Amino acid sequence: MRVWVARPEPGAARTGAALAARGHSALVAPVLAVRPTGAAVPEGPFDGLLLTSANGVPALRDTAVLRGLPVFAVGSRTAALARAAGLGPVREGPGDAAGLAALVAAVLPTGARLLHATGTARKPEPAASLTAAGFAVVIVEIYAAAPVLTLPPSVGDALAGGDLDAVLHYSRRSAAVALALADGSGHGGAFRRLRHYCLSADVAFPLEAAGIPVHVVAARPRETDLLDALAPRLGDGAR
Image 1 (tube, rainbow, N blue to C red):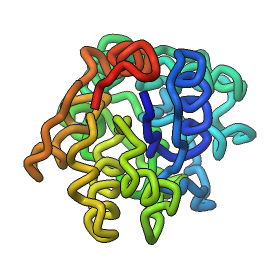
Image 2 (cartoon, helix red, strand yellow):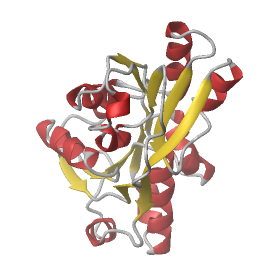
Image 3 (cartoon, rainbow, N blue to C red):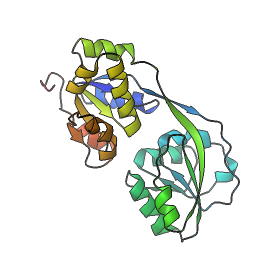
């Protein structure tokens, strides 16, 4: 299949390589650009560090106040990057914010003070559930994911020429941005005709709200589940 990877780097290139290894043709063209904010990590003490995205890991690599602090990572990729950066010990969540909150509540006592390193466009969870359960959650916005201003030309050309079969969506925001860019460039119809593969029901929401059929929502919010759902070979006729 010919697949557009719209997620930001550095994950986009890795996904493109994974698609190629499975026999697909990947068009890697992110619609979000991730940049550090330069925000300082607050002084501790903290009882744990919450990571809800792998995007937060690079900015924390050499932060002395976090050395040896237990890390609660939302899923396997974030956990692996945290370990590689020398953070931890690391506990791996099931891939979603609700599951991460449950993991923290099962491990730490009520009243524990947690640092949530997140992006500027963050969601209420897991902080809302943990705060309601009696934990103290301190937020630091260490990265921002800014939308690109126009649809990448390679994507516009591919949509115009009917040279794409599918698009992978990894976040609710990137799905919404991809839709807006396609509509704004006059390629909304071609975008809607693609097969849309979403990492979770939350990711699929802006597409479904716009009346776009979603072909697959991964059974678990893990990349392997999403890639396993793709047709196995190029030229399989799927559109």
